Length: 101
Image (cartoon, rainbow, N blue to C red; front, top):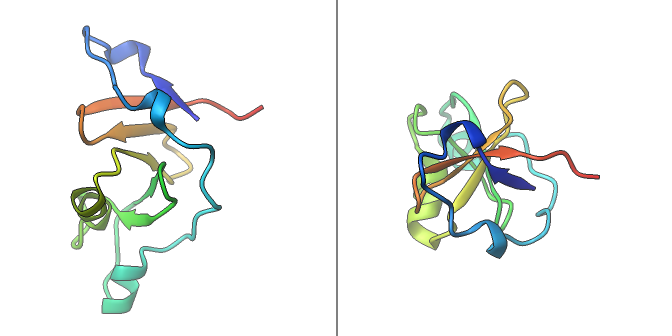
């Protein structure tokens, strides 16, 4: 679950918060497209719509963005344990992850 990042609102909002489905299936811990090519990745991003896992824009493949471009799925969550944020590609807006429960 995600919510607006109160520190960076600047009058902007993410129009996709209410349209996100419930928690997608548990993510895999690899970018399969990079793995299949023998590439490494920097960090992983998890699609909040369908659960697809892709590598970040700092990675060679940029597979998380490629997934968004192909499907239109708007929000990805960072899978890095040191990062508790999400990003809306469409609205170019940071979100914070809210603990379930």
